[in-house]
Image (cartoon, rainbow, N blue to C red; front, side, top):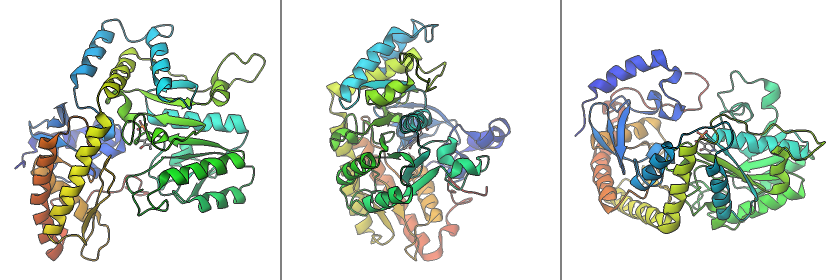
Length: 447
Ligand SMILES: Cc1ncc(COP(=O)(O)O)c(C=O)c1O
């Protein structure tokens, strides 16, 4: 049982003096975890990670879904090492950029051109910019329920965390009900000729029957693409989370979709910083420099966008996916976790309080209180207990290629042990068992 967080506690105290938020994404922040948790990770291997106190945990999030094969995965490391020896950044593009462009586009026959970046926000923002330039319209539409598309103003201004974003910008973002074609249609009627693009994730782990698409995200997406085109808008699918998870390369293949643009990141380079925007030629080439006499669109322009070893990591990751059934394996592990967790929940008579989605690509858990309301306190208690049982858990299990039967069984043992504490807490309140405060929402107005 893991209870020693001595070095983590020192780290927690110091880091906020040095780094605002104590991390480089708010999702990794101290307010997202219980007090009895690791504050910093020293290293990882496969599906396992070690914190600065030397505690070893099973990893359930895999670098916020970015590490699709496993930590320090040798076939990827080998390719990166070879590339590092040649230097990582030059005055002109490096040859590996063409190799990646051709390889990635061969996976996405819907699209003709690609632009690289280091972060997902950069590519979603670039897609929005291209759509505005192409349509000469201002408004951007996305589903109100989806959590995150970018830290840039066009998206973050629409959330509770809009301090620092002018209202004029916020007014340019409009929302519809996720997976609901009627709601999107109503939005086009409300803003005729004004919406430049619709951006949406193709599917969430709750698109399993409980959401507006009734478990048929592909049907909704096709209707939504048609609606956008009928109304003169472009359609962007954000595969940041689904890419290399729901299918290879993602849900646009799974559902045979042809969006105008698609954004990629996270799992496509096994955790290395390589993201991409792919799209149709007529839209993408607006960012080019060969349209003599026409106005330039300043698309993505970054010093590190062509960093060679991250691209090499992407090529090695693609190579591994092409030669191994990573999707089949990961989803098989996800399906095993779902069916066996459901069994444990039933045996403990907790079906009214703990449930999980049936998305085998990323099973997500919901934790409820005695009143059957979703409850951050109970969720945090579950995190605390899983951590005590050597599993770093935040409410989802992201199965990677390194999660085998051994890892899933380890997860199940921890889940069963943690649920027994959860059950007792339902009687007397989570406060009796949780040390410290409940985790807070990332998108909250007041700290
Ligand atoms: C759907 C989606 N789009 C975009 C992003 C932004 O990606 P990044 O954190 O790499 O900027 C995220 C990040 O969580 C995401 O989940």
